[in-house]
Amino acid sequence: MDKNTDLKQTIIQTLDINKAQDIISIDLKDKSSMADHMIIASGTSSRHIQSLSEQVLNKFKDKGIINPKIEGKESNEWKLVDGIDIIVHIFHPEKRKFYELEKMWSELIPKEKLII
Image (cartoon, helix red, strand yellow):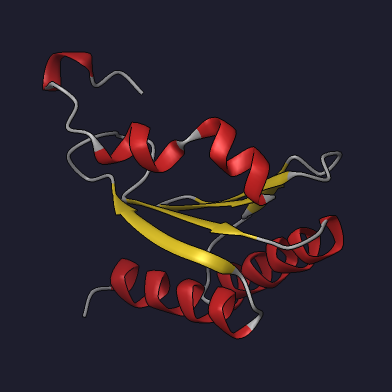
C-alpha cells in the first residue's frame, strides 16, 4: 500500500470513528493536479464539523504532512482540510447538497480542460 493510500484510509477511518456521515472518496489523479484524492463527509452540527476538521488536521500532522491547513474557519457549514495530496471537505448536509462536489468530480473531465 502506498503512502497516499494508507493516509487516505487513515483519514476515512478517523472520520468514521468520529461519526461523520456519508463519507466518500474520489480519485483525482486523472482529473486534477491539485490533489490525488478528495474525501467528502458530512457533520451533524457546526461543532461536529469543527471537531471533525481538527481531528483530520491532527491525523495529517501525525502522518508527517508538513503544514496542513483548515480553510473555512469562519464558516459553520463547511471546512476544507488541505493535506496537500489529499483534500477533505466536511459539510453540513444542506450545504453539501447545494455544492454537489461528488457529482462535479465524479464525471470524467476532458484532458484539455484540466487546468486546476
